[in-house]
Length: 376
Length: 180
Picture 1 (spheres, rainbow over the protein chains, first blue to last red):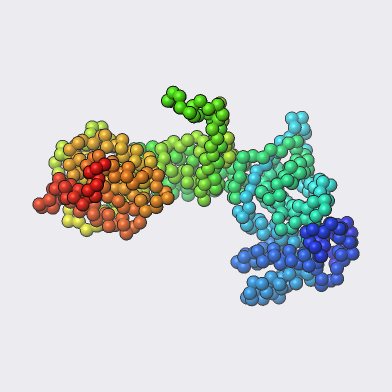
Picture 2 (picture 1 turned 180 degrees about the horizontal axis):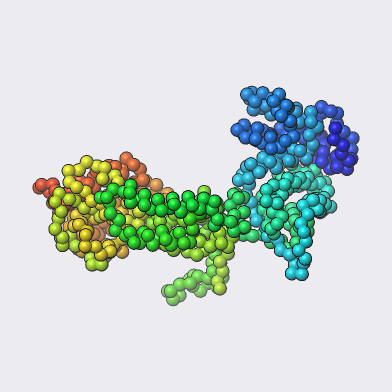
């Protein structure tokens, strides 16, 4: 039987009567429910979280979660309908006295497996010029982060899960002074402790963003936090761009050989009755494209947005637009399932001239996909 | 880098050469493959170029038919074709040039109006063909048609010459085009 302090219980349990609008505090006795009974709303949260998991991933995720034992999992008949399986699993969770914290852990694991379902923003922190470089203590960071949020908002659920490369996944369910935390719209933060970068899933509750930034900055002993103009669904690609890892390819050898084979393959498979007149030009385009984009697979972004605020320039004298003092505002957005690969293939396909505009090719280098262009 | 002339080389024995000019290499390649699969008694050669003028080459055989491929989705392809037309000897336009417009099927993606290519073909007094080269069946049908055109332009079909063909094809065009 798990022993929890009354305060912890009051904070983490949910009132059964009116889940999200209760103005009263949960009475402490609520926490010590009988052995088989779980809080209704908590059980519902478990049910919905487990129901989200696709059947093909169910065993993997449950094993990663490591809350239900092998024996318990074996008692569940995985051949029934999904609703029945989920019901059995929720009953098992009740047997093990699962808490909100365990449910939050399961939610984090689900999100880790389905990270591309969220859109991730990138934040960069910086230290003040005179600051010492302290040794990073993960436990201290976690407790400090949690304390800051709990001090500001009485009702907030914070959960942590350590991941690879000294990173930590943080799940935050926001509440207010008077409302219990909304467990169904959490925000996620992935912080790489050895770097000044943190990735956050865009939460619909934008008002909590400054508080989140502040908590991160103070807990990690930085001075300032800035939102980068970089956003994508693909967390791993964002990582690659921000840590400048995109130009290292594990399959470098395969890549170069396949490129040579590719260009040779064109000659071998091609009928000798087909002759390319502009071979020199084609090779130039290939070379320029390779110089700019490299041989490695590009990081995956879905769009690039350019906001223009420039004055109208015209060769013709006069004209209504030429006399306009205010800048013209214009938004150009490029979208694609894999933007950088699409840009890379534009010149070889003959759709654009090589080299491409530097505004397009600088995206991974500058780590931005939102640009504001103004008159110099 | 001189302008291409139609009759400055001797023809090869039973050989017919077509030159496909267009910016999108993948489309040209596919069309070339389809043409070579078609049944033909003459020996076919397909040259692919992005634009004219062609780089100097002594080994190039006599070109019997030039087809300019314009992708209606791309203004760049039309611009490139218009610039290439200046480098062509006027004698080519006596039946040895044709225009092929692709992409008309996906109207929402078209950035060039159909009438623009119609006017272009009319200005140069050459036939205009429409075909969605991305669809395999249409491409195969067009390839067969081009092979037939090529054979006539190369003089392999007795009784019909390129000039005859031109007047035959013009007859099937919409008479209101003359008013443009």
